[in-house]
Image (cartoon, rainbow, N blue to C red; front, side, top):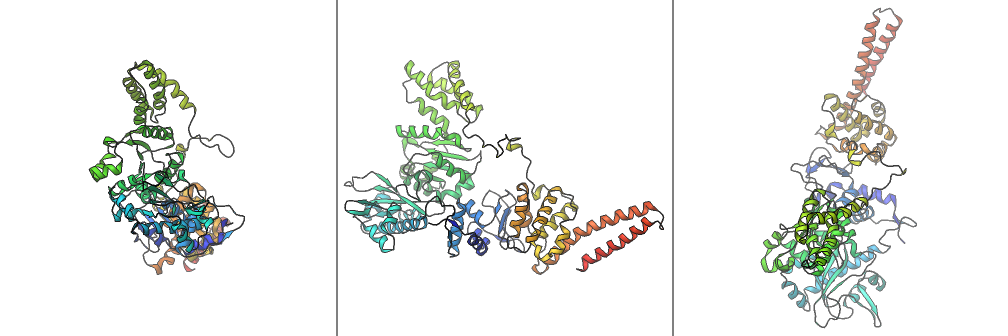
Length: 623
């Protein structure tokens, strides 16, 4: 059973990965100096590039938003992978075979993940081929009738599972996959007549993770003599967990991340219609209700931004009402603002595009209303408001919705709106809402975890001191010299040499935050020749200053000629030490002047110290 990836392999994959090539798949990079490239940051919107990559160091850093890291963290952030998945992806990229240690931490998805993913990928290719076959005409006609041509089907990987008993099974067994592997992937079932294809005579949509790997399939019935369910999905498997995946997220993730907006629709064809109409942030659940795990997935992609938006679409029927109320019950888990968009005449996005065109789909999401308002109206609509009993029941159902509106400034207005909807007096509705509101405040949805010591935190996180950045340092010549010297020590430490660095880490620094970095360099100095020199400095620095260390390690040095870089680095460090020696010289001269008598023994000692100091200054320049 495969376990933890061997540490040596992790380091080797990192060493062999060209960070500029990797980042270049996502960001257009331009040269910005020696071993420095820059481009527009993929993690936040900006007009001028502040995202820097240092291929030789293996690090990136954005001077705008502060994001930084190595090849593994870049993939984790961009494609929302775990650390192990990012190592595996990069290993596959450079054709490096990983070794797994027995007895290590087990991967949550199980031991055969790679084989199951490969089986799903092979099945997806097979289904795509079958869509173009003679038998696939029924599937092509079904898709064309919903406005999807061959190019659209290719874009979303839509396929067709042929009728018959075991066409896919035989095809995959010829490629070396065993029946147990196919069963574990959910591609086959087993009955009295043996193993047979799970999907037969159906249109199929591949369900992929954010990295584009096929985890499973969603299938729709085509033929009247098919007695199975209208929609059939891959069952739960070691790689497919329906409550944790969103169809279309592999295509929508970058648009969602950059625009801080997600659109949640109800079906595969709705996702296709939205994307083809230009709403490229659309995703859908896979045969299950939208729940807390889906929220966690979207939050990882969008980030916890209060200005972000999640827009749901629901059918106006009873099932849609229930879906809206379920979504609202989990709404407090979102930092983002939540909305609902309902198409005219209850059309879903696919039918809306088919009958009214792409513009109508785009316009649909401009007419969104807050989710709590939609849930409020749907809740009240279930009751007969012409009767006293109906109005009282409606009040009982709607009061908790108002009490749980995240923005307390909106509650009074919607309390008045509810009174109008129910035809009740405002004080009566206010009286019903207040107890529920107090109860909601008394039970926080996500209490903060206790500290490791068990003590209460001393202050709210929002009151924590801001972390130092290059942009927050004082703009003075003294600070500029200290900053440039630390950049040289981090980026050209080996060229400067251990002896000179040993002196430099004792130099005085007026900027307190730079003193912290200087001390971290001093602590890591024994590892100067190690390939992970920057990592050692980061480990020695307090967590609050690691961002500043990364900025100093990434920032371009003011020297454009590669052959002069080492000379410049030594010169700037020597200038820092020379500043200390000059300060000492001024102090000695002042003391000598205060003594006054040249024959005084103290005066003679100072003269000897001054001579030694001048010799030290000359020695710095002559090394």
